[in-house]
Amino acid sequence: MLREAQEVVKKISYEAHKKEIFTSSFFITLLAEQVGQVAEKYIAEGRLGKEIEVDIADIMVVNLAYLNWLDKDATEAFRKSLEKHEKAIKRFIVQRKK
Image (tube, rainbow, N blue to C red):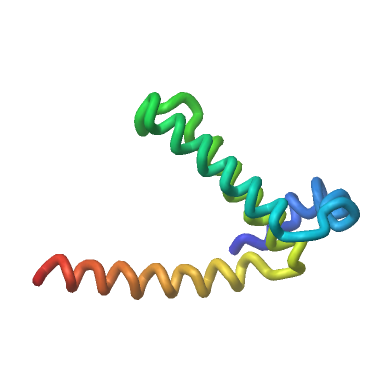
């Protein structure tokens, strides 16, 4: 599902990250920065903010780079995440009906 995207990110940044990044705090900081940029744009411009979708996609790219650095499969992780998401939404719907 995400294998191709993960491979593209790997070709771009894997070697540099493996050589230069020694702790996961780099990726956590980068993710926080990217999420902050999306939040700032949304607050300032709303959901129609100029290229907000690119800023959101930046978060996805950082996540794929992080998974590459960890040598983890994004497709399998995404599948498991979707299962969690589906269960959470089902619980949410049930709770809202109460």
